[in-house]
Image 1 (cartoon, rainbow over the protein chains, first blue to last red):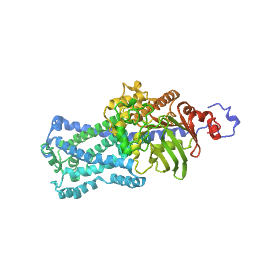
Image 2 (image 1 turned 180 degrees about the horizontal axis):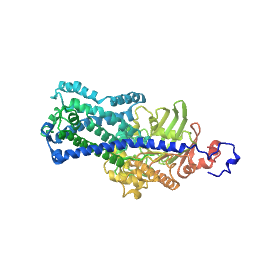
Image 3 (image 1 turned 45 degrees about the vertical axis):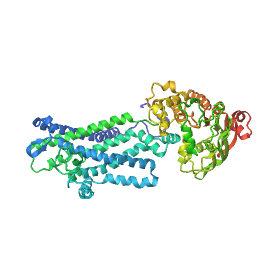
Image 4 (image 1 turned 90 degrees about the vertical axis):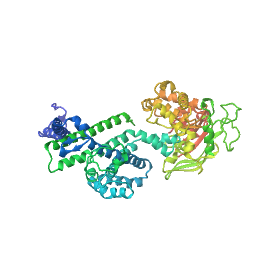
Length: 315
Length: 299
């Protein structure tokens, strides 16, 4: 670099000159970008640390065994059993999954394999709009339209009930399932479809026997993400599912659907917005929150495991 | 009629290795020469080897405004290897895809004229392309095994055709006929994508022959493979012609000369210039243009 023998013959700018501030500026850009990339991780870590700290305070006063196995949740009497809240969350997750997973995959199959370009250009934005609706609107819709509809068709649902809330949660997560599943199916190479047709498979056989299995890892991932979303969904259940923690009634499973429940998220909102709540009651918020976090975290881990296991590499 | 043929084909013995592709109930005759007989009698006399099983008459294909094939008249004999050669864009692959109506999958493709398979025009309105493709298997340019196990790849066609009786045996037979069995017999549950390219292509051949079709179409089956894998595929193709009618598209003239009985030379513009015995085409072609092409003066 310091050797000038080459530049002596040219008249261009000296290639050894370097503006003094440039190196420092380049370094600065690098660190600003790093900070942005690290910010989300820093925030996540601090949330977990703070959640854990307050949850530990709670667990020094309430036996964790009592918390995780308790069948009653009554802050006014300092009874903190998680199971009724877990029941609500479980119901929301299962019912919304029953609605969203088959519908979402079917929609994805249609969009990816059957729809004409014109049809797709109408349907895809439509589904994206569905994903853009604020969840409180879904909640009010559940309360004002879905519940009366369920009553009109003869189901004995209460005003606040887990069924209509879960139906709306299910509808809310359909775009998530369909969009991610469609991406996975579109990524399946056409050569595989041709192989199927060449074997004398019908379109439906190619779709179900070749495309869907080849896209399985993406479809599973979309399921897990959608379920995480359902588990964490708050506004719809706050508005439409009622505010009464209740245990699942295993002797009459169907009756469960028609009653109000308070899932974990809704309970946290209630504790947080209550006028007078004991210190212990307030810290229970963090115990519930930490549990919720662990559940969705485990689901994400599972999702990654499944994706890694079933992912097929295509050229 | 297609349906009837399908049914008679379905009822073949579970060990089809020594059977002809669509076995006739007639016990007489050399099994290697014995031909399939159309149940409706359009081709009722037991034909001799070399009787056309596929015949095109004035076949034109258009992709949008572009004409890809120009009035092709070609009769492909049964249980022989027929090679289609020619420069890129000459329409040889297009012709191949007409035979099992894979061109149906290309929106812009339009086919005019007739193409007969065992005496039936496959472009007649009553022909079901799905049923047709179950009798005319296809092997593609790039190996395209399903992302399933080796076993499930071979079993795929058997399953969609409900030929699941003795399925283990049929899978084994197909893998043996595709000269792949010894390499994979201990790892049938392994993903087909873990195989080498040459093995994958032989697996695709096994998948195609497992359902015992009458014809196997091959679209440059060795062009993506190394020379050793290529020579294995070539050996295999010659063996397959004992039981199946093989139609192979290749841009490799030496390959056509080595393995085919008949050769069709397509030249640019979708024109079939010459079709004859392979020896004749390579040693003493009628057409000067074919001679120029064969000797490497162009293309």
